[in-house]
Length: 426
Picture 1: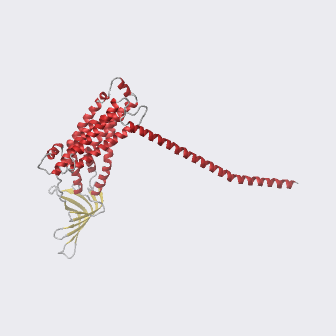
Picture 2: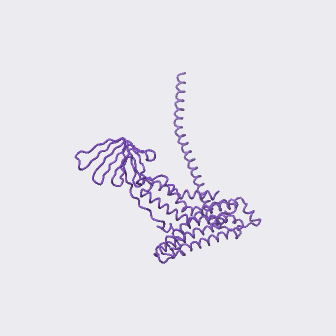
Picture 3: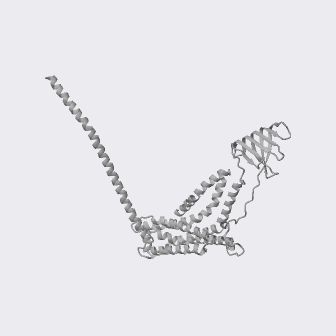
């Protein structure tokens, strides 16, 4: 469950920002809302290549952390179950997710990336439907200017229509109608029919001195759809090629050096991203075991930072290799070997060194910093309480000082009154 929850959370966070941008683009272009979810679905395989390693690592890490904090791991190791035996099932899950991730980078990601670009092109070119905004003039084919006052049933029923049509011979038609709706033309797929009802046509021709006015109950106005450019075939960028195509271009001397560099960089980037998953169970175990009598969660934070940072290093290495500045072996496989050596060392420290900790120095530093922060917090809290107490005492003394003159005045007045009373009795 932690692994699946992390997968869902990571994928949601990665597509959230893109979703807001797509909503803005689709709203500006006037396309259907359903295209947003189609584009997000095509982006999901690309984001899953990072979400799957994160989910796998955190799932294994939380499982071993739970065993460690409940002392079950100590019991298992005491009866002869080492980390190698305990990692068998996690590695089975890792191999299954590795195969799925390989399928993503092999075929699904390139095809989905191409479909995303195709949808973006169709949205900008108007292939997903003409956009007629209420209360604004819309120009169609530079011949027809159309304005509507209201729209119902997703644009099928229109009200308050005004149209101005200019013909090639110079004739101009000004049409107003109470209602209208769009209808398909089976004979001419590139032409739609706007059927108007209860309106007036004003025809203005250069050859007639006075415009003609005609009232109608129903009138069909043909509107030519704009010609839509066909989208390119798959392969406009190296991320749209599947792995065999990258291999074919990367070592083909007939293509340009720039294309070969980009193909090799993309191929090696996908390979190191997939093979890196074999190291994640070892990294999870190394960072899941907190120090004795400690419930520190520093390992969880460090694991996320390491995986995300390594992914960013690979992206930078791919960009550098695509420019032909450095060989992919140096920019991609060298960081992979260094990262793998670091993980193996961290796992060896935890599994084979008695009392060893992979990030013991970080744990000690974090503990020291936490203690100092707690002391500082308590000091500030104590100081704040002292200041409040001092302010309360000062306010009490001020109130007492204000009350003393009044009490003295009352005592003096009472004494004078008693003196007057005695004088009156005498």
